[in-house]
Image (cartoon, rainbow, N blue to C red; front, side):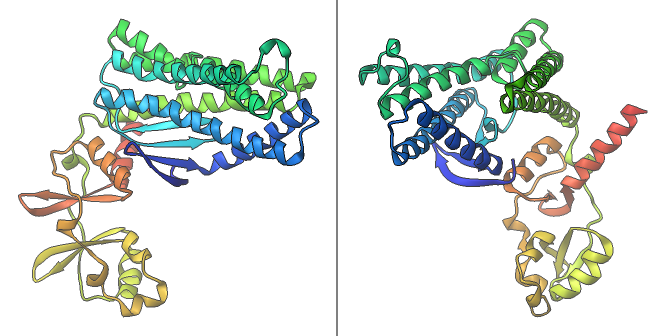
Length: 378
């Protein structure tokens, strides 16, 4: 979800749009326009497309509300939420950690589908108040048509999310129930992920069957949803395994304590050619007067136009150590990794009693996980 556009913040939560959402937004608008034109041929082209765009916008706003409901309950349970990202198949709330107990997991998961169903009922209620009657069939008013479609699609979204296919909300509800029975989150996740993959395979088989039976793009879309659920289920379980593996590991166990030190008076071109490219290292300590004063990484170098490198010194762009977020050797690796992700950096200085003891990078963590994985597979 890194390739996302930032829309702003809502209730302290950053709202993002993944690039894949743009394709789906276009398809939804195009599909709505076709639906409105087919069911209401008397509407003008302008009315058809205007209400298609407005209806699609309200639908995606409904998804944001769905995710905000997850976020609200998560925050009430002590789980910080960084962001909400809209992507191809819906939305996802960026929670900073897993639920600490089965009850929290249940309420965080179940509130989403309930919210979508309630939103759907509200839209249908507004259509009824405006004069729409279900027995009349297809709504004739553009306002009715939009409200009725939003009502049905939100109810369908809520029901779909109740399918016990992890990591859908229904899958997380299933995990919370198994968790409460077994008392083991990993076992509950493994069971929920297995159920999710089974359901995903069912979606794929049904979708392909429908496609070859003449259902066309609808069958392929169902198969695609199944494939996505299968990938998401396995990825979610692997992520939890990784988190568990890092649970007892400290920064001091994986950090690099032999960070190269360089002179701050060196120009950037020399630094790039003689240090970065020659050694492959990404982070260096800037020493002046026998003291470690700052850090310089590939990130800082990339901010300077290449033609300016011969005329800029390392000391001009290096970040003072006191201005950089630091960790101690006793900090958990998972916490350090979360900080790197949150601040969008590749490494963090490790400080002991005010002195720089080393650096921990994402590469250190990946190397640890790779070694652990190889030993586990042996």
